[in-house]
Image (cartoon, rainbow, N blue to C red; front, side, top):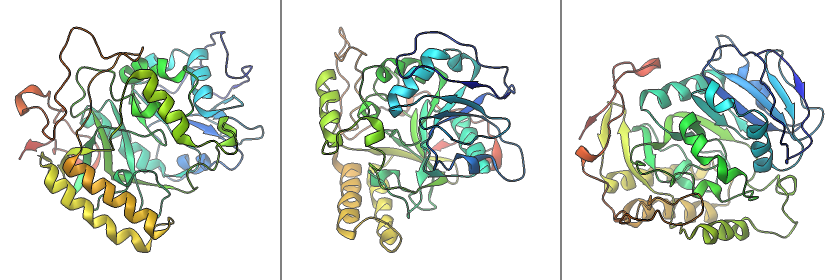
Length: 351
């Protein structure tokens, strides 16, 4: 992508601009970057990146590569994304998959290539890589589940490193302009009538989150004593929604088989206890979060009923049943069995 420096006037940018002519690649990585950002390492090494990189800096003096597109967007993270999509609405037409990755994520170019390939192979609308056991995390469900699964289907994808299909991002864009800096990730999986097997944590791609959660709160517009849950509660109340836990309800194993048993997925989650020797969290905190994850796998409703962007359950239809079972196989559109990358020919079969 040709280099160009553009400086919008903060978060309330209204003038449309044109992205420079790109490389023709269909994947885009966007990072809200400060001076200590790790994004320079995302394109290092041999081999070609299967993605363009857009550096949306929130601090001056942020470095960027010769082929990166760079913009300066000071201020909060989500507000900055909102301004970016207002300035460059063609992002969702030029690219098929768009990743929003925090600047404290440690990941390689080959891993990002693999992540995009798996998203395409399984026709995912919204997904994220798994976190390494030595990562800082909010939800234990996001930690890599071991070697059993290629990916796990989930009811939530958090905002640390989500990858959107262009269609999904287009639907979710209104959430970015509501003025919240957290909590919208609890809603962006609930804007469609077809959520099943569309959202996932990809265990085959593992990244490391290097900073404690909340380190950049002041840069996101939070007061010194303001907790994240204040905004989360406000978001859920505005939309008349409830969040009862991060649930993984199905998985694809390494043989390409679809695992539909939440009991087995919950059993597999017990392997996270082996991460106690690696986690940067306090042991009591880690155990509480990992135990919550297992309990949610077994007991919590998937909770994917659709809401509209005005926060009202879609009128004229019965809410989905939110028990422990997912819809029967015949009611779910299966992902494509076409493969790319090192899992050629896998797809999956139901088991």
